[in-house]
Length: 273
Image 1 (cartoon, one colour):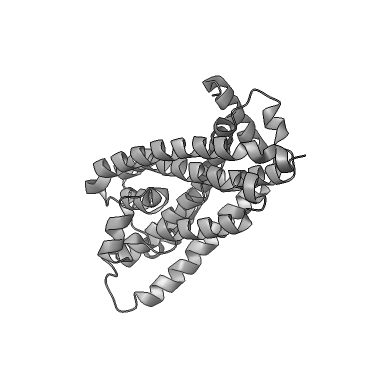
Image 2 (spheres, rainbow, N blue to C red):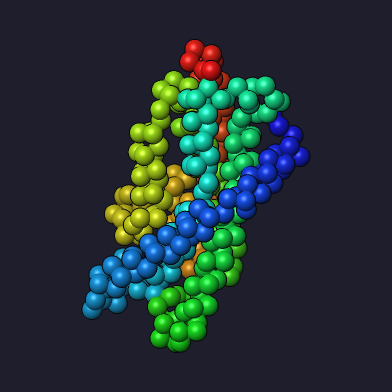
């Protein structure tokens, strides 16, 4: 295991790297805003003549998508997983073996550093959207439901736990490259499933009751849906149970990530450099 100071240094280096190559982060934030705008156009058409859909009014739905989409794209462990898998496939993983670096700790620390930078960009983008809506007048501002300050604070640890779960899953997907070399298909299936199950694509509130009950036993809602709900002052009743579920999942996923690396990394010499 890496020392905490080493993990912090890796996170700072990853943050600095994102500052140096920040164009794609700004572009990603812009595309997230475009996606929210397109979703809003779609839901305005769906809400035509209706006060609520799935227990959500149009302003609540608009704010939900604004928060959920930006929150979902905070995750940077997917791009780190792609990088790690490519290094394994290309025979460059030996750099980690030549240094006193724990691959899982390095992966989580670097992902955290990049995510902090992405969070700063997302916060600036949301602040800009709010400012534009405010300057546009009361009618434009009424398209969004207000964010609850206490709910937003409660969402932070839930979101952090959800992102940790996703990072552990992305690490396990990346180390499959020790066996399969190309893990692109695994990543496509995983990313599509996570986007749907997290509520970033379709609000979980619109899903059948049995599906919602099943998803409550997984870490997926914590990646997008639950933080958005909490920020809007909803979903507080499920908070204690969600925290327990997330803690159990993260412990299990951490153990699984350790086991997957220990089992698969021995194959590296067979097709490495």
